Length: 432
Ligand code: GLA
Image 1 (cartoon, protein in one colour):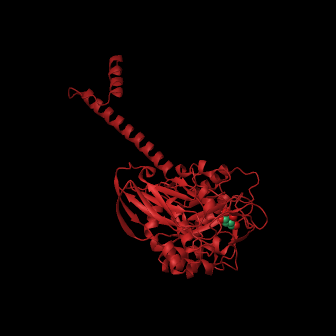
Image 2 (cartoon, helix red, strand yellow):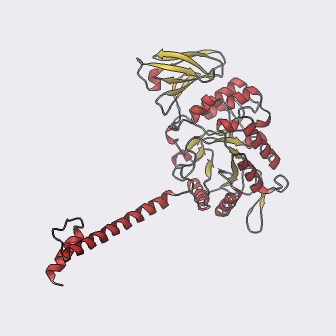
Image 3 (cartoon, protein in one colour):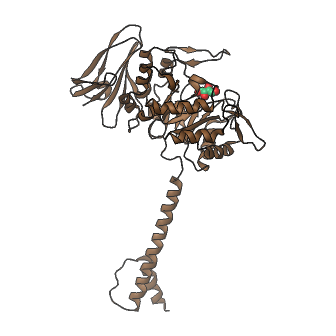
C-alpha cells in the first residue's frame, strides 16, 4: 500500500459519513469503514447507557416519593410487641379503612429482638414471635401491606436490645430474607460514631441486599440530618426528640434527662426546615399520637392537620383495633391526607404569626395552597390568611374549601378569615 492510499484511509476514519463519489474498490472500503465506525459508536453508546443504568439501578431509588404512611407499635405499646398484636393491627389497618386511606406500612418498633446467635445473626424473641419474623412479614404482605422493623446504629437499641453496629450487612441480608420493606434505625448507644457515615453504611448494606427498603433515620435531629440525610439515602429523618401525647411543652424523661415534646414544641422545631424535604426524602417530626388519649379531639385534629401541612410521614401510633369514630374520622380524612401526599412534595411553612395565632401554608401541585389557621390560645379567635402571605396577589379571587367540613365556602378576594376554637385549626384549600 502506498503512502497516498494510507492517507485516504485515514481521512475516512476521521470522516465516516462522507458520501463516496464513485462505485469502485475504494467505495467498498469506505462503506466497510463507515459500518465499522458506526458499530463502534453503537457499542460505546450501549456501554455508556448500561453503566448509567447500573448506577441508577439502586433498589432503593424511587421509594417514598410521597411521605410514608402506616402504623408503628411504639407510641402505644412500647416493648409490649408480639406476633398476635402485629397481626391484629395489620387486620385492623385493612378493616378500619386505613389501608384504603393510604396507610401501608406496619412497623414493629423496639423490643422484637432478644440476642444474637453464635453466627451473629439477630434473634427475634421466641416467646413473643413464635413463628419468627418472616411469618409476620408474610402475613402483613398477604393483606397487601408492607412490613417494617426497627434497629439501632449503635451497640444496643434504646430499650437495650442488640443494636446493629458491626452487623449492618448481616442484618440487611436477614431483613431482606424476612421480606422487610422499611427499617427505622435509631441512634442510642452510638458513643463516638459519626452519624452521617453510620447511616450511609446501613443504606449501603440495605441496597446490597437487593431489596428496596425505606430507610427511616431516627437520630432525633442531633446532627442536623436534614443537611445530609438525602445524600446518604435516607428516605425520612427525625428532626426532634420523641413526641409525647401532649399538646404543649416539653417533659423530662423518668431518669431526669430532657425531654419528650408535645405537639406545639415539635411544630416550632420544624420552622426553617421546609426546603430540605421533597419526594423520596422527608423531614420527620415523629409518629402520630392521634387517639392515644392524652389530647382532646380538637387537639388531635390540629396535630393531624399540621403533620399534613408539613408533608410529614403519617405513621399512626394508636390501637387501631378499637378506635372511637371521632379518631377514625381524623386518621382517615382523605382530603387532609391528600394535602400530605400531594405529588409536588413541598413541605408547608409558617407564613404568618401574631402571638398565639398562626397561618401555615403549603403549595400544591396544581398551584393552589393548603392553609391551616392555628389557634394556640385558650379562647376562640378569628384568624385571617392574606393572599399575599400565600404568595398570591391580593387582587385575585380564589375558591376556598374547608377540608374538615368537606364544604366549598365560595370565592373570596384578598383573604380568608375564620373563627378558630382554642387549640384548634381551620384547614382549607385556596384555589385561584
Ligand atoms: C427512641 C426513638 C423512639 C422509639 C424508641 C424505642 O426513643 O426515638 O421513636 O423508637 O427509641 O426504644
